[in-house]
Length: 175
Image 1 (cartoon, rainbow, N blue to C red):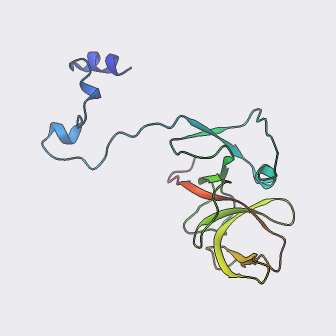
Image 2: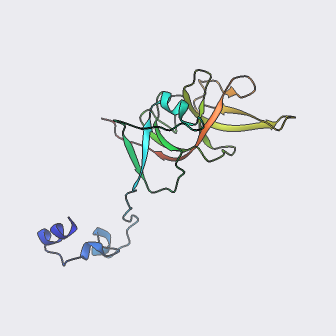
Image 3: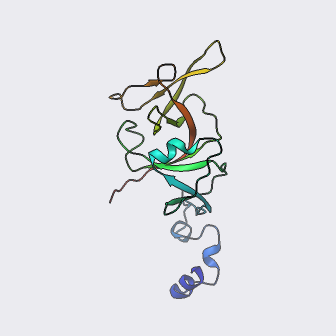
């Protein structure tokens, strides 16, 4: 495709392959953007119910008629994408934004996580470690960014961390 574009606009062959080609270089100033590689790793885009059971040990998913996102991140095989719904994570995460989650990453305080609630459905919140109990178990809360929603504490509700967010895709224009 690049060769066809070069021929059509009268450029030398392979000139589009060279670093620094573009408007800024052509007009004598540095550009603040660079070409980005399109990822080749396919990550399944799950719904909140599928994400709620994704962490179950030994669960093998065969995804038929599922959408995939491409990423260039080096992730575990137990990774998935999720589309944000609702407004509990406003202003940083809007409905329709997409995140990529790795189930093999242990969250640290301040990370964003997907967790399974008592209804076996996934929820997306900020992870806050409160303490370690006498039995060595972490007591944590899942915090929405929108103050209109309550936090969920692990010592008061049955919640289980599914995975930690590693990528957030913001969309500025909605169709």
